[in-house]
Image (cartoon, rainbow, N blue to C red; front, side):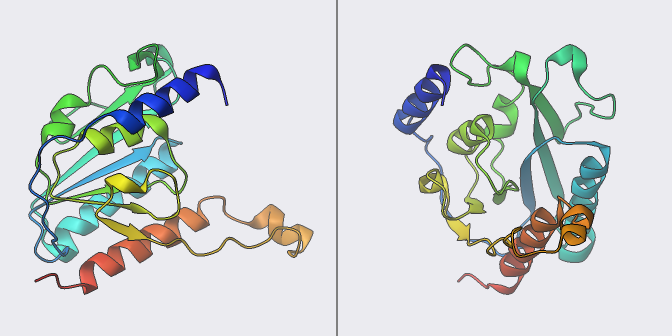
Length: 197
């Protein structure tokens, strides 16, 4: 771990969360949902957009916001990303020396979503900063990481298959996003079935 990353972790651990009204909401009762994720490729981008469309059509969510982190500088940002009212992104060049986002995330973090979901299985530190600063009523993410204290609802991930026990052809043919897709589906299933009173 680099010195810069250690400083980021140390500062983030001491950063206060903003005042917010915590409230438990199921997907069927949510009017707004925010999704934060790491931008990977165009196929992943389409998966996340389809997820937003499904939230609107299947669960009746009126507003779905997206915020992605791109691990590239602004000049190398994928051309399919656009900043619109309910969607945006920030990239490596938008981080200060400590690794904190300095622009593009404020409006998203200040939006009082009913539910904010971190779609990542592994901690993406700039997204953890956004989760900490968010005023969302309920924050949802993966359990078992050191960054769980910001979450109101934690989903335990399925244990990953041991690649040593798989056949070589299975390892080659395995979809690298299969675990992410499975966990995301599980998260939405839990949020839709649980009826908070």
